[in-house]
Length: 389
Image 1 (cartoon, rainbow, N blue to C red):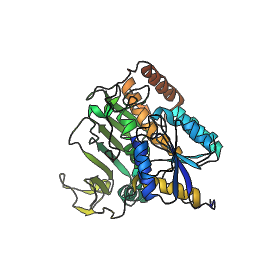
Image 2 (spheres, one colour):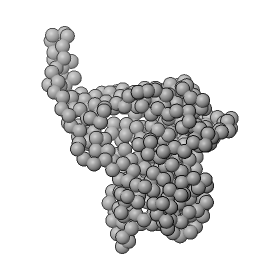
Image 3 (tube, one colour):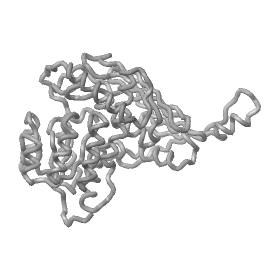
Image 4 (tube, one colour):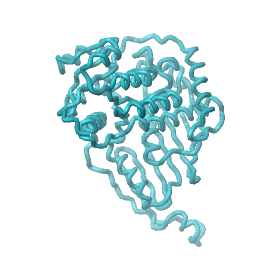
């Protein structure tokens, strides 16, 4: 679309540490957007905002911001439980939406949100900033090409999401089923879940083991080990945790004729002289392996992160250029998170995509736990918004 505008008027709903981080990115790296308004109940970060841009309007609630008519679009960065309702309200007000992860806390409500987005005719984007990483885009391109054959195994281990107890005590909504709606799978790992399915496709089923408050004084999961199976018979593992140090950040994709390994900011392509299937059938020596060529194929391109997503969103509104991620795609990573937790709660394997019964069961079990949530006391801690990136 070509609106004739030079910039979109963008508001931020939920101006906590994440909102402040987005404001910095918009003001420095998104020339297609003008930050015109924010909504915040606490007002904690208003003064730092005023130091960057004095003429931004500040509202107490999202509803007040929506009604003011000072924005064309909003970036929603509130606690997870508010995402679906506030996005629907924004659509009702005629505003385009860029929504922080996760798009909701359970798949049933996100399906309803996606239906509302379809009917609205408005633009719905998701803040999956790690899709702007050139390494991830390269991995997706290689897998999709089929050059190295079908996937045989995927392994994601992301255990360097260390969080101190003070992190969970920095805000009353953190680490409770009632307000947060989940733990590491909903807070830290949505990006990794999104990349896993974006690059490799969705598994056909998953079985998971979760530790709830294993390493912290919290209700939610802070340790997850999941096993997945794909429709073609391939296997996968997904391991994440907020209680380890130094931890590991590694993503492996093993294909019939090659392997991708992403670790320590390097992407390696390991290619055997003979594919696994051919070697298994033809090699007559019993023991043995084909020789392997290892090549560093790490792209040397810029990684624009959050600003890249916001800029693409703005350029989509102004010129019709592609977004980084459509908001409807948030259903996939959320489904993986819900399925893993439901598997841990019930002790059974969850088929994907989740059926209506499992989606309803997850929503019901979540609300049962939310009803028992403890009131969290905060420690009055202010988190550096750049510390998570």
